[in-house]
Length: 631
Ligand code: NDP
Image (tube, rainbow, N blue to C red; front, side, top):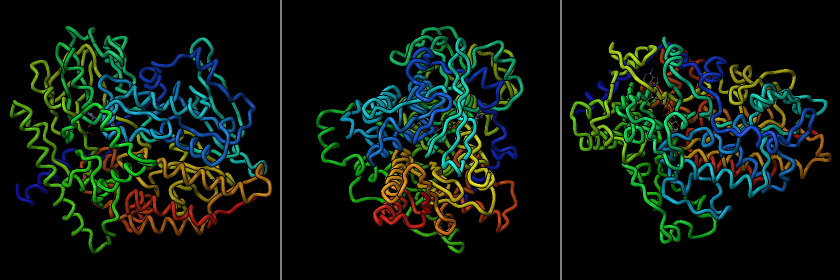
């Protein structure tokens, strides 16, 4: 296809999918009705949590509260320990019944990470753990989270939702209200505790959401319905270790969604369901994964020297930031030369995009991307035997618009006689009924519906209040959402902000981002730990110590964020999805003020490694420049 034709086709496909309601097309598990019906924790052992995972009692005081027990929370805790703090001084609070974050909740069949496990699983070298495969499966990743927690003696306060966080400037403490749900027999426990340092590391994709469509309640009342992040093994049969879903024999199964999650589930459902209907709104690019076991020879090569994991993470980040390193250590679909365009979502040091070079920049990124897109469309046509189905599975958007996926069994599933692709040509399913799904005007009777429809990504509230789903009220009673939505907004490294003493967060706004989020979280965690530790060394009284960035330093940093933000202008050409907040902004007038507002909230446009260099340079100067210290 010629270049103008391709762009026209991409644009037509985008137009079909733009929805003025944006993120509001979904309802998420914070909604009490939907939450109570679909959000129940299937994995929790309330007796265990009550006996072992409730270190905080009402009225307790603790030095550090870390919100989140997944990769981000664990890395923050470990970096604080590395900096000299003690495990008994910190508690990781999570709504889950254990460590793992996203890997606690997600236990669907086929669950794995298609980013190499050697770089994705945190602290492999420190815990002496050898991943079983190049791409690790879910239980193994959760196991690594549990291993880290136990190796470092970390305390978790589980089944606990933070409700409110308020800074008390006299006490120099955060007053945090929380509710712990200890299950039907014990009920709710309300706690108010004090902490000197509050770290929000709640991750990004934690709250599942489902389409806000008519008939969902009727469907739930009459058929089995669950979200991919709350798999019902009891209903399907099988378990994580042996996913033999024998109860699906004779059943008609529908799965809504064809994102990274559905791509892993579909091949498993296809093995057991009598018939599987895959409801598609937008296809994903699915490249080959080439899974393999880790051999002793592999491991000798990979873990070849001290610090190998950090060097390997950097190596991956070079490639996905369109800044290739001389050696390609990972050597997979993420790091292939024609994939460099996916840097459109994560930033790159390759150029500084200015208003007068936007057009030329976008053209250059499309040039790289076209080879990748054509290769993957040809791959689909090769694998999927039915031509019409293959055509419907071919995506028509640039590689930076949606998360690329890699799987060896997804596409071949559509060659099975018991699998039907129901493509809705960008419209999505019409609605639900008491016995199934209506799509393209046709009713599908189903016994079970799996909603692989993704997660709330905080929509317009990118503040730490949005991240922890609880108001964060700083000095002088200013709520984070208020600052984040005003022209006053600024942060230092996307991690701390003036007016919020001793509060830290892991934010994409102003932060560095990567397709390997573990590496991004670790940079932030390193900054937080070293800043707190350096401040302790300087403080006369560490007990009353309060630190926060000055307005001047955060403004200066955020000016730099803004300067680099036009790198992300390619996202404006995208089909909707969570990468773009469902094309948020497509229906807004682009005033210079609005544009500046968005650019100041962009991630670091020069890529994750440049962000890391900037943060490390700051740390190595050791002068806490721009951090106001009160003690
Ligand atoms: P996504 O948000 O990526 O996908 C949701 C899917 O639901 C999309 O295909 C979406 O279509 C579809 N959908 C939503 N509403 C409707 C509707 N009304 N009718 C039909 N389809 C609908 O969620 P996922 O859970 O798949 O993935 C979320 C993220 O989790 C990934 O992007 C990735 O970051 C992470 N992940 C990582 C994995 C890994 O290997 N590391 C594996 C799994 C997930 P549309 O595209 O049109 O919006």
